[in-house]
Image 1 (cartoon, rainbow, N blue to C red):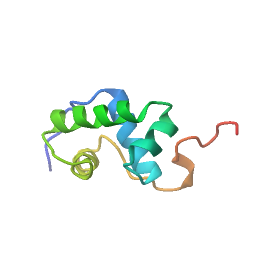
Image 2: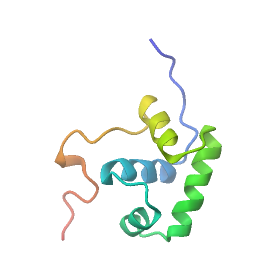
Image 3: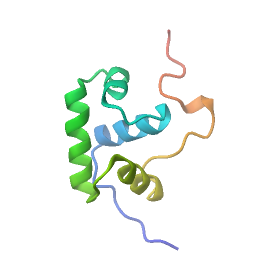
Length: 87
């Protein structure tokens, strides 16, 4: 059994990563539009994530968080960002 590791990321940074998984995109523009942030904010947040996790890529950050259970893969259409919100 693996040892529990506390997450070093803020809720906002985890939201960015979870949204990246849910949208299946790591593109600044796509994530920024969805999260109502500027693309530069998304880019700087990924830099903070890389530093906090000691990784050098967005894919490595996502994998680290998935492996530690800090974010999860979308299992069905019911947990996509925006589900249940008025259109």
